[in-house]
Amino acid sequence: MTDDDLFSAYVAGVIDSNNAITVSTRKDANMAMGYSLSCHIDFSKRNIEIIETVDSWAEERNIETNLTVEPERTIFRINRRDHLERFLKLLYPYLIVYKDAAEIVIDDIIPMMNNREHQTKHGFYKAVGYAEQVRELTNKPDLKYDQEYFEELWGDDLTDTA
Image (tube, rainbow, N blue to C red; front, side, top):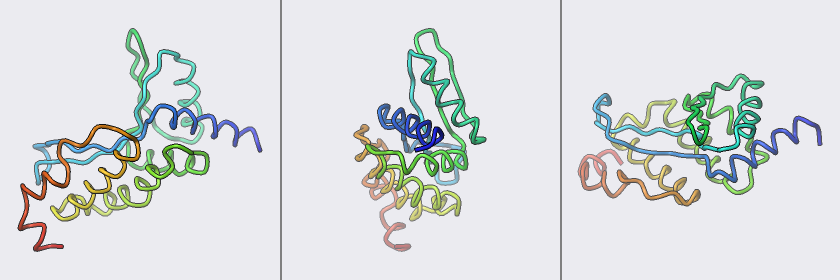
């Protein structure tokens, strides 16, 4: 195993141990349907060295990160979809705990978003289903705006385009 492999395995361990893969839905007046879907990497630590190590790894691979320094902690975040995709693809071989969640983001959610499929009611509904799978795999709270919510909101529109 090379030093680069060890570095990547360390970063994957940080991501696994912090349950950092997140997919969320929210109301968004700027979107035509009134809702948006987002995926990102997000975790915080009191120990800045851990954050700086992950940030350094990402920077070496031209992955844009956002660090927010607060009095008690530092928050690491990757928001840009193309950078998130590259980050997860590079770490995928080393992930253990949340490998299946990463796979859904890489293989299903990001391609749908890149193809703008999530900008139709049926596509958004389908993407929310994937988001629910990720949240289940990562043991995060249920989505407020889940598939059931959109079934009630858009009912006939979903069956007409299915």
